[in-house]
Image (cartoon, rainbow, N blue to C red; front, top):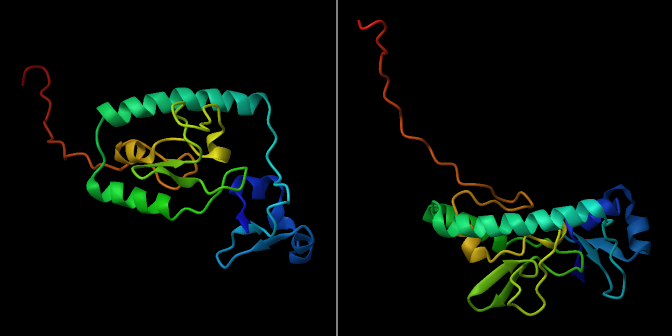
Length: 175
């Protein structure tokens, strides 16, 4: 059985179909409501591609470079927030357009969201739609940046409370 991505489910309008229609197409549900293909030989419906998807892929590359620099040089998230993000990612069972789980270990020390964007890795995918294929980031780097966010909306920037400002009464006209 292969899990179907949320984007694929939306593009194919599977939530509108009856259980009988889904069964005839070889699609089922698990206990948590995720859609599954009964056979790996079935083709996955994929969202349309075009100029907007290409533009989003190029923007994603530029954004990823900025996020890496910000994660390395910027403010770090708290240990509690890093653990929260890590737990969300490791328990995410959403899949990409090919039916593979987005959260994956590339090696013992490195996990990514979808195929890694890093061109030094075999089978990397630089140009991508982050909503369909995952962000492609090295998650260890993404989790530590205070202002980082999951492109699928699973977690966002860490909210940091500002210190209280002291009130200073302004003087007018030298009084």
